[in-house]
Length: 392
Image (cartoon, rainbow, N blue to C red; front, side):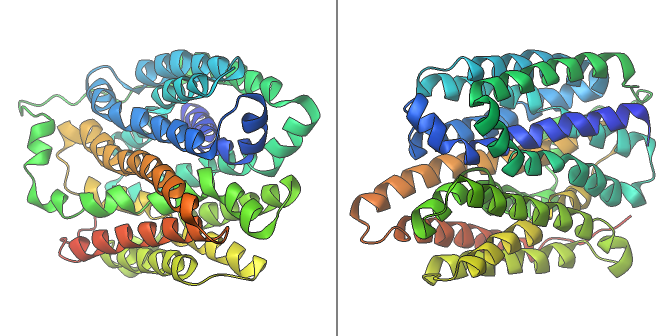
């Protein structure tokens, strides 16, 4: 793999870290900043919504400016600057502002890689390459679990976040100097985002794209820590371990999905089957009061593994994009995926607070969350079953 793609993978490691590290900081942020679980749900949701909102301008910039300047400038200003704001936070509003800025900074890095794959490599291997960079980047998901817990215990959370701010800025400078932009498409064809939105085939993919990642992202990035603390009395060490296991399951799922379209000759039914299992795990956690710690860990891991269909769904949508709209196409798909997560983070924060007010057991608010997640995936699958399958 080229050096610029390796550095983009590392930038995506940072993106995965930032979207998930709040799960292990809930206790220290509540103590030092006064941030409640609902406050952190809002902050996490703002990360995803800012990330999603940026996909439209990022798509335009990839097609018109290229990935080098797009990724480096936004990561420097948003990622590095947002982490610095986070490290200086004194009230929950500062955490929300910081996560919003970090979401802006992280918004171009994965799509810059996908843009280079779509423009410089065979379409037949797009899903495998997409899964590869997503799997490598998910190391950040692991780093935000037990390693972050240990680092916070050793150095304090502010020092850890200052360190990530410095690493983000250094990575952004590196991207500016090493990323190679693909040759621009010279075409008489005019096109815009509206041309993609007029394609009926995509509208049967968008609903599942908007909900399939929400259970894994919400569980791993926000609710896994509070769930195991409240339901099983877990301490920081155990929370770090279970988040590490779920992160590993998400990485394994990403790599497992990658080559399946070429092995089985279908994208649609690989995606459909995997999300059916993810939905079933959500409903199990929602409708059954799970008494076994390790069964709960297994169900969280199943949501992470089978909910990792993002690169396969991206490849399914990519098969319908014209060459001159690839940048806007992949970012449009990402907008639905990340925007859906952002909305769900905020809604689940409110749902948790409402149910917790009248709950008679610690598990009830979390059961309501997983019924909600499972219902969303079920709705997306009902629409997706009518989508047109397409491979390269």
